[in-house]
Amino acid sequence: MNTETLKPTSKNVKHLNGFSTDDIGDDHLYTGLETPMKKEAFKLSDSEKKERISLLFEEIMDVMGLDLTDDSLKGTPQRVAKMYIDEIFSGLNPANKPKIALFDNKYQYNQMLVEKNITFYSNCEHHFVPIIGKAHVAYISSGKVIGLSKLNRIVQYYAKRPQVQERLTNQIAEDLKHILGTEDVAVIIDAKHLCVSSRGIKDESSATVTSYYGGKFSTPEKIAELQNYLKD
Ligand SMILES: [Zn+2]
Image 1 (cartoon, rainbow, N blue to C red):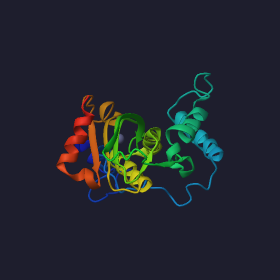
Image 2 (tube, rainbow, N blue to C red):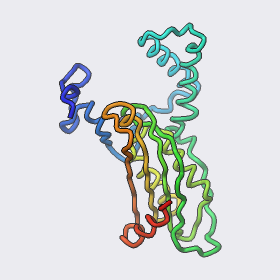
Image 3 (tube, rainbow, N blue to C red):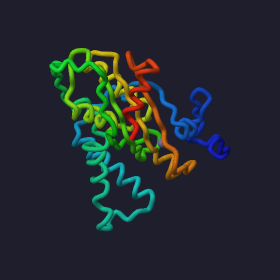
């Protein structure tokens, strides 16, 4: 452990369960299933948010000493603001949640369905740098089925938030259980965190795997069957 980061500074005096705020970030501890949002999160419209973020990001760049009159830089604050709200953090807004239609399980297919290798890009909520990974999602129909592309869309929706991998895994699983009306859902996520590879401990080869096995997926046989389908 790097003792430098443990020295209390004016910004690092608040201890959470005995951890400093730096520890919380580098160890990627998380606090619950729900993304922590304040009550008045949607008081501002998207365009008002973009306007404010643009001004604030301009200030960050200015404080760092960047010349905002430079042709290459002057549009950056607006680009970042638009990207945050419309793209990489669009999953914070429930209005952007994908509309899901269910269909009757006409073929009476009653084995597990696995949608594997869903590529996603998210961002670590502790450092605001990318998490890049693959999600594998599986369910056993309780009578209803979901369009395959919708499994992908649910993953993308929850990925487009400041995230922690455990929460991303559980949010996808809980939503699928709710939509499909079954506990028989599994989610496995295998991801690289750029805050681990490009900074901090600078480990380029490690990846993090998280999983959720609900209902019928919690038996060793079903887990083995699922793992077998995930082999390349
Ligand atoms: Zn991080």
